[in-house]
Length: 148
Image (cartoon, rainbow, N blue to C red; front, side, top):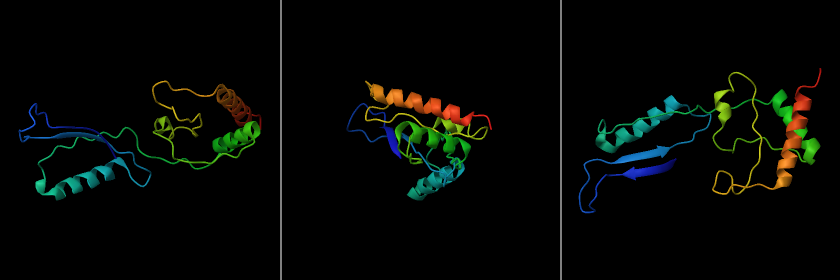
């Protein structure tokens, strides 16, 4: 859980607030879904003794998912091995995945650059990493779409 904002709207420090607002973000895994998470949150809020004295506006931008290994992941792993000589580790430790929008319609695997500056001001990567990534993508496409 990441708290983005807590606000009581008081311009003076010595005034007891009439209400408070909080904005928070919860990233959840495939052991949860949006409905279960909402029930969990409402249950915890109700236990404070203030049941019904809060408003919870919940938006789920995408349900958690797992894609079982298959042809896409096998071709991607082989491409990584051929280009880098290293065996990739399949992991779900990355950030929010845009694959959540398409995984029900086609097989997906996400693979890209990582680094200390990702999604930060002045994001940058080594040029050699871009060259290797391009070669991995090309090799993956050749493997995946090879005549069978």
